[in-house]
Each structure stands twice: as C-alpha cells, then as structure tokens.
Amino acid sequence: MKQETYTQTDNSTLTHPEKPSFVVKWNELERFVEETFTQPAENAIDTLLRISKKLKRHKALHYAGFDDKEELKTIYDEDLPRRVQFVSEKIAQNFLQGQQENVYRKDISREMVARNYAKRMMDLHNPKIFPPKKVSFQTIYTMLFDDFIKSISNQNGLRYYEQVVQY
Image (tube, rainbow, N blue to C red; front, side):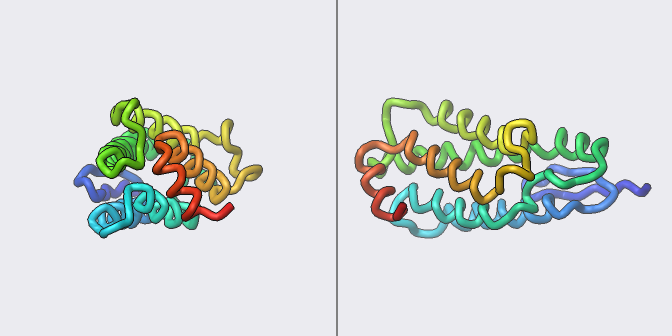
C-alpha cells in the first residue's frame, strides 16, 4: 500500500496510506480553535464553551472505529503527542487569560492546569476508560468541559458559568 505524507497545521507530518477523517477534522478544529482565540468573548470561559460546542459534534476527531490496529498505532504514536502539545498550549493561554479576567483561580499553576487537561484528553482516547459503544462522545465532552471549567474557576467564574450554562 502506498504511504502518503500529510502536512498538518503545525507543519509536522503524518504518514498514512490515506488521509483519515480524524486527521482532516483535527486540522479543521485547530483552525477553529485558533480563530476562536482571536475573537472577542465575554471571558475565557466563553472561549472554552465555544470550543466545547464544536468538539461535541465531531466524533470523527477520535480514533475509535478505525479498523486497522497496526496503522492506528502508528497514527496514534505520531498524532497524539502533537495534539496534546497543541491543546496544552491553548489551555495554558486560556487559563492565563481567565486569571487576568478574575474568573479562574490564582492558586494553581498554568502548567498543572495544562497537564491535567492533557491527561483528560488522553483518557478520552482510551477505549478501556471510555468504551465508544457505552458512552457517547457528546456526553464525554460535556462532562469533560463542565468538570474542567468548574475545577479551574474561582467564585466569579463559577457564578458566570452557572448563568450561561442552564442545567
């Protein structure tokens, strides 16, 4: 089978016989995230909520359902570290913004927040933790963002979050 190399949004490459849909969707999501970070928002929480809405609709961003396990391992090994790096940088950027806006806690470090989120992201891709046939990706992402935002928000952020997210 012919191997093709694909340049991703960060100029890294991914070698694969065909461009998997999750690679295409991930590149689209990276562009969306970059655009979202440049758009005006009420605060950092709104930025995360915009991204969360987009993520919940994109099951194709996940490796679940990809049939060839050997090729999947190659893609996973090449792609996941890049995804984690991108997301960690954006979470750290968002967290700093939220601290400056007085909606996020000041007693925890950006580094720890970014690493904690990256760990959660990696867990999402572990079918032993979140079996795709038992838990929907929409449910997972809703809980991920809900728990994450609550864990990093101060009282101002929690009040704001409760106002914009009607339970």
